[in-house]
Image (cartoon, rainbow, N blue to C red; front, side, top):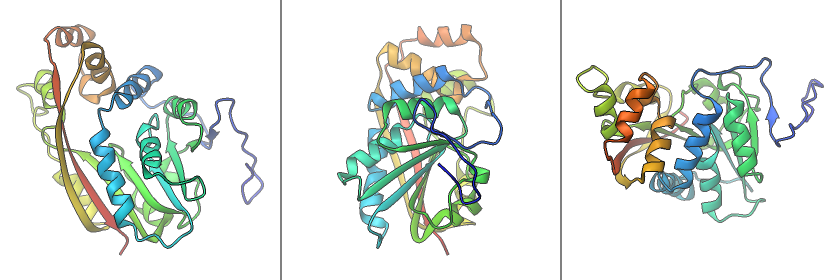
Length: 258
């Protein structure tokens, strides 16, 4: 790939493009964490969430372009974007999926598992995309940069942000943070910040329970930031407690520019 000013970027041997000027190693976001996240995503853990996103994309973007361009900003190991694009049932000429994340570990898994999409290591604060290139921008459990979202989004495009709800993984939160100020969580501040930058057009509460076998429970614990402040001894104790199901509780906010 060659940019407009002549800089050349080679595809890595894994099939992705590295667009960071210097290496970054986000704390805790290591290879093992992304591999665990991939196992959880492939188990269907987030299937109902992705189906709700797909419904918004199908019915709400008012697309007038020949092709729908979708960016997942903070895509991690890529499963959400890949499942969304596959589920739309469109041809490669009709939809293009692009995933970006600051972690090369997540992007390596994405390019390994989903070679039909475009994957790049990049910083959301300095996104390597031209203005108004995307019809849909996804921001799932990830930090936001609303000025960059507005710059990259078509005037009739949509921004879909997913944030945890009060009861998201409450079974784990109660164990890891019981009797502390982290036992409860509110996304009110995040949603308010969203509304200060984008015109809110839809809000959905998505809540369901998911049964887990012991192996999936282990991967869930290792992938969630809820466990990052605890000890390995405490994690092993939780694994022996016989938790068989957990709660998925998220808020989807959908916005447009203006």
